[in-house]
Length: 150
Image (cartoon, rainbow, N blue to C red; front, side, top):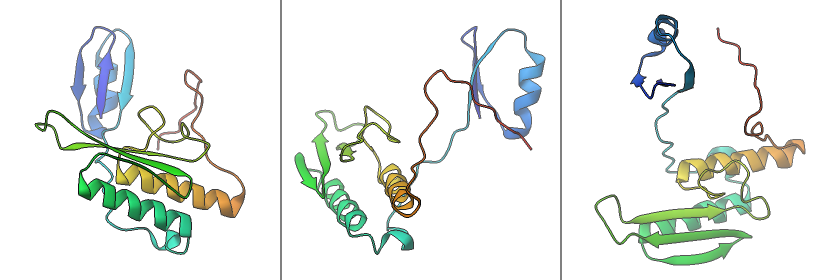
């Protein structure tokens, strides 16, 4: 976990240290976020393999990312964009995958899925929405959410 305090101080903690650290400090806790490992997905989940749209988009994004060439294409209504970086010290380029119609839902960085892992998660959510007729949406920015900790 990473916690940030109002005095600008921050620290990385294990889960069992989080509440203890918050309790021993005065001031306001600005944020507490769990550092998750980046999602790395090499293949589609079984439940997506029968979804023609998911297969086409995922495979096209994999090809574009592997080629590392500037490209802007549309696949099944999705926009897949790859931009090479001028400075290669932090990687060759950036992948941006935009959903049809709802480009800002469930993706980071200005409405684009920026990793194969986040794309995979969005494809799973879309597949679930096709089955249930309802799609999960994050709470609005600035809204209060209730969290239960076990």
